[in-house]
Length: 190
Image (cartoon, rainbow, N blue to C red; front, side):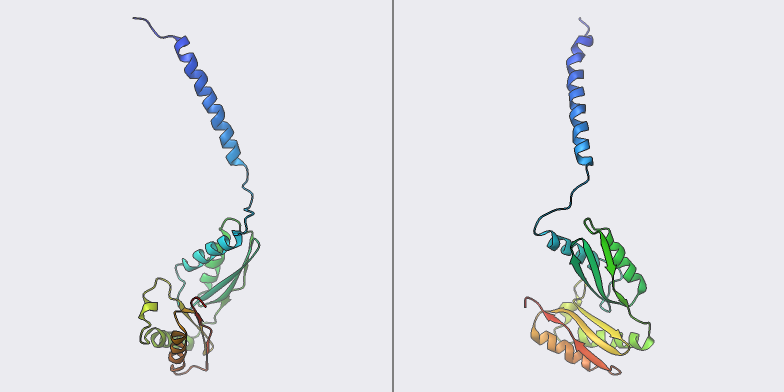
């Protein structure tokens, strides 16, 4: 029986070295910094990522309202929140998105007020307890946001129809101890 020597392994060694050389070249190609996408739909894709990050915030409630604007690689955060930590959480979540270079956090933290807290609870029961509004309550992120600041109520968000918009406004106006109600609800697909 004949032993296989170095001559048999030499072609395999050569193939292995070539394979390693190609792998090293591929690794250096991937190590180059990625250039920002120059496609026409990049702002829309970035906006979708920002929207996703904001609605996934763990303490985002129907008593908070977050909006944003995308200006190139800058994101401007707008809206009102009850908890100061949510303002920072929103900034942190958006700043980690690939392509975002800066975040201008203009979110307003609503002043703490036991009276406003009472109005928030009453408004939630009135609006989401209205006939036919259970469809909005079962969603993971409620589409109607109730912003209360110093006894003044603003409804923000999206509803299915003009009738639902009107019903939500009427329900919000029924709550006692409210100075004013502003109905900024938008109708889907309009």
